[in-house]
Length: 389
Ligand code: IFM
Image (cartoon, rainbow, N blue to C red):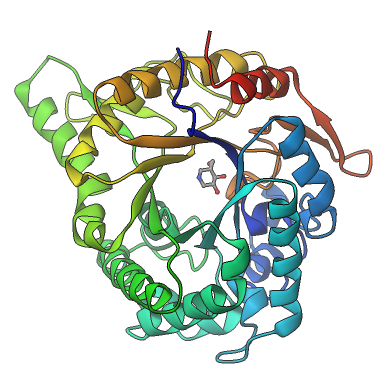
């Protein structure tokens, strides 16, 4: 399977999960106050990407990547409302400039789950002013970092964020309200649209959104399962995408798993699953990609990966997922790139450091030493030739 010559091969990371010491954020506060702290790792130094970014960008080159997707930490750039920290901006300039000098395209996410403390204290994404506040920050990033950014991404996985933080109560601020979770999605859609307009008013770079979309299968026991699967799929994908698509130059798709509806509820097969129990279904990626064709926008798979501490399945997983991507391209879906999640083992939110998604093992016992896994080299070969065998 040969991919187009200009296909973008990449890997993704995010700020809080890798940089370390994100002390001014709501997540940092929550980690330190958490009542179930003994169950959950704190992000702490994470992978120390804040200091080791050059070494990690070298790893990208070693893997023959053409691009890196990373995120900017709002809490660092705007530590107090309306006060932008020039030292933090300079830091990100250095990181992004280093990526460019190493020949990497940069995909830069402006919000990846974490918020500045001041923002969370005024209600975060439930506050009616959130679109204005977020878009001010987005505009500042565009004005100051534009020279080193190829693609801007406003918000990562709004549905996951709103559900985990406002519906399931698992992430800060740990609310359990369907009303709030729905409201947060609306506010995030508005924030994306306003940020899009403000970024576009100062720079000409492509601006997009990143959505996590799972595929939904159904059993043939009852026709109702099909209806429930379709409703789930709509709620998880199109409900958010429809109102933001016209303010997006591309769609970023994060795909990890499929859910199967059996007798009205989710009941997935026991295998194959990743270390977190997520059901791995390759065709699901193809189906989601085909469902996005109607938007007629370029698509980047901004995340796809497997928690696999033994690195037993990762190389095969990547190849099988890519074969589905290839099929979708043959069917006319405009898939322009693929980013493996993640370059490094990192802080997997409320699961702590246990899940290992990385192409590169980070040895937490030995000074965070980076050790590329076998699958790293398999992916590197794919990225070098643009061919999946
Ligand atoms: O680690 C996360 C990432 O932050 C967002 N997408 C899913 C990944 C794996 O759970």
